[in-house]
Image 1: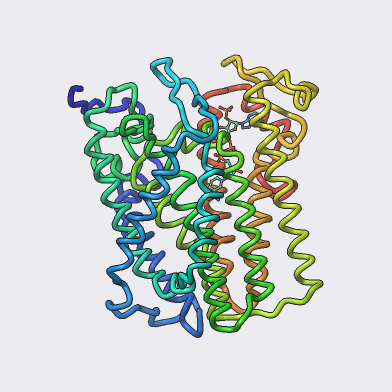
Image 2: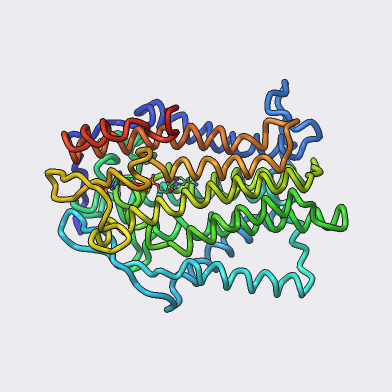
Length: 420
Ligand code: NDP
């Protein structure tokens, strides 16, 4: 294959352009380490000055790279096992469609069996709490190495395999955004694998490790810890159960595979999404039955909105004649695709984000109201989804033109009805 330096002519820079692409890979890894340090400090204040800094010895443990690489290898092995069906992705620029194994839920179940077995054999899973910082350092290191590998390899990819946004010719920006859309080693799809496997399953394993640490320290798991573990396990199990839906998301269809996604998948998700569980190890919270019921209801409502709206759109995109969506009101677009203007997608333009944010709040509430840190996820996620919504709007306006404008007039609110 020949060396490909071609640029995308009309690529418009996102995430603050070159400045953003230079600063974010420095700032976000430091944020992960900082949050982990704050989380285990007695005060757990994100606003503490001078900031909590770990002694260098706490950042490294020779076990950490073994665990991270072993974990990646184990999940890759599950990915390659001939389990589950094989599905086709969206049509690519050259008219072809890639094949993807839909066996993420199988991987989660096998991981759960292995975890139970290792507990039974006496493996001290609670030790993950002590290892959090070194594990995060290694995951960040792996993210940089993998992104560099992807950036270099992308120069041998054919032009039609490059993403729209990540080949501007600026090395820092392209390294960050990712040049190639679907980098593969043989049939092993690196982006699809990283999206839902090592980081997402790793997140619930870390959570479980925090629960076991709590059992070690206080002889039983608290209600708050059980709620956080259960809610987040439901979220991860749901994502893997509906794994096929990831094939139509912006990450897979539009974005290149560069540092932004690699770091997000491998380091940011497992180590910042598990902050609530890690926080509860050091800062136990008591929760009344009434409080717990209210939180469970909030999570249930969020999950319902999130699941129903995502399923409605996926069903509509896969088969608009299916009885569950055939009666919904739609508007035509010049591309031949239609847009839903009733049902969940007639309530707000991103009902799935609304449900996701309600769940995010329910995950933080078990940690009480005395600290900001457990609410980091809600705040960050609100910013992420507002930014993501704006990116998606831009793509949809470019794709659907006037039809998108009339959808916006019909459904004026973006995420929160009557608010935003
Ligand atoms: P969405 O699932 O919201 O998909 C957006 C796409 O849906 C648009 O580009 C358009 O694509 C299609 N669409 C938009 N409006 C309509 C309509 N009215 N009728 C029909 N199709 C429409 O994108 P995301 O990938 O952002 O989100 C997927 C899920 O993942 C969400 O639930 C989100 O909350 C979650 N998420 C979670 C994250 C986490 O870290 N926990 C991070 C990011 C997302 P087209 O028309 O081309 O089909």
